[in-house]
Length: 289
Image (cartoon, rainbow, N blue to C red; front, top):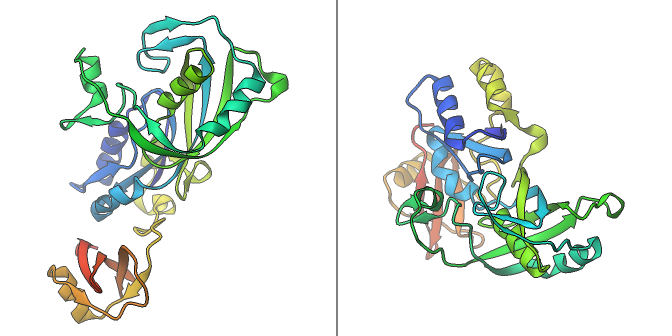
């Protein structure tokens, strides 16, 4: 489901609301955590679709956010404690000039108040407890950056930016690095995720609105299990379906190589298989569909 997360809401609370609404023990999970102060697109999977969350996490994302110049907080957002001040306010032209240097692949150190796991525990949980730890830099990719604030509207205090990026890119860390490049400090005062792959703001629904609907009415917001997966599809017969479900590799004369194949039986996805030495090895089976 393409759910719209509102500011002040925790993502796991949305999962629990949908689980209660489904009135069953079905598994529910979201793909890509948003900070409590942020809002935006939150893909939520339920049932056997939760097995595909790792693939949804790989989808590119688009954000709109506001950088406030001259102040740094420990969380790099408005919920944190101020830890630094600067009198430097970059010009519009300076911001415009430096943005292209961030496009492409580079190393980024995530915020200590991020969802990055440290020995299985989210970094933000450790940071809130006052634990001392360090997060290694990770490779990120930014596809595009553009200024949403017009030059004529720029007051020198804050600026709105749109970013399209690969999974794993942290907006708050980007704002920190951008400010450092401009010789000042900054934090993100507003953050909106407008898309996650094919899931967009235009087609999202709030969890309160969703859970007030009956299940059949809500089907309008339920996406197919293969939604957004850009893997080739191959049809299998009943014997081949059983072979995959039993965890056995399937030898086929595949027309080309692909890391993964979507295996269908009678128009339904029954397996996501990994190609290995010309055979399809079951990776995720969907026997409960």
